[in-house]
Length: 356
Image 1 (cartoon, helix red, strand yellow):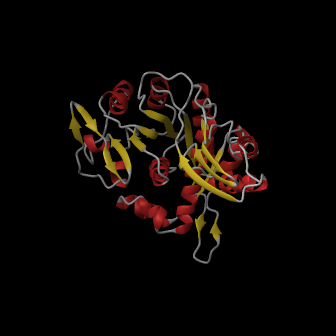
Image 2 (image 1 turned 90 degrees about the horizontal axis):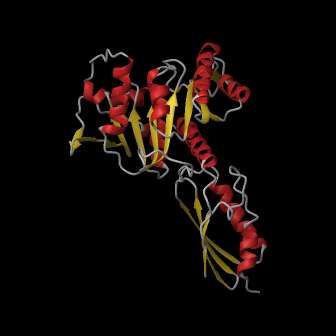
Image 3 (image 1 turned 180 degrees about the vertical axis):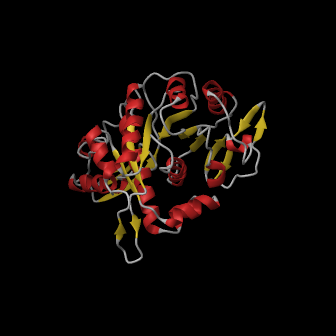
């Protein structure tokens, strides 16, 4: 018996996005439906190409339509990263989501996580920018393989490098490899503003990742005042002395009315050759801190030597391609972040649906 529009839409309203906790029709994820007897063709547009639960959505859509009487379901999944629907300042309007990556103290792998978040989002199909805002300790030139290079310019503005699938800028490629940046606060914040807004020609981006200096000083404060952040990610290692500072970073962002998208536990444990784990710093401490603070926990990244080797060599894709456990840990964090951004932006208004 042929299906009609009401039956198909009723079935699709039973499919709940497991992260956004609303049905996919209400979330405007159903973009096109074609019905031919008991054959249904449907396009579902995910809110991010790095959707962590797309297999669940695909399974549930097919199951709901088959239960409604369809004999053949042709499902197409697409993705369109959503940005905030709230008021935006007229700054970087071509960027849908701006995400700060911070840490309460140095040495926890904040810059390493920022780069791998950017690369992971790009590998999923998003357009991604990375701004190395760690003014005093820019490590991105090394990790991206850009040491000794000079960025190009066009019409008086710097053109970001297009490297490893992302658009990137770093003060380290301007100041020189070994040049110390001996700047007081106003000089540092002025350089940060120039690099982020005034002197860089950013393309249209789904996500911009901004690697901040550690701590709670002038540059993080300036960023929160300058641009409409989607939210912040805080990187920590699991021992208490590091978590104490991470909590301070979380509280700083909260006092500045910036959403905490999640905490990442870096150097969670050391994987052993026999498959065991060496708990060096107190595995799980960051997850407990996130629960206590009432903020999302994005996942843990173990202490693989490959991560250090690939970072020193400027080969971030090798982190995903050459060590399955490391790649899986990083993609879990990437997808968790993308999911939290979608949750933040879930209030997007619905549009008209085309049905034939």
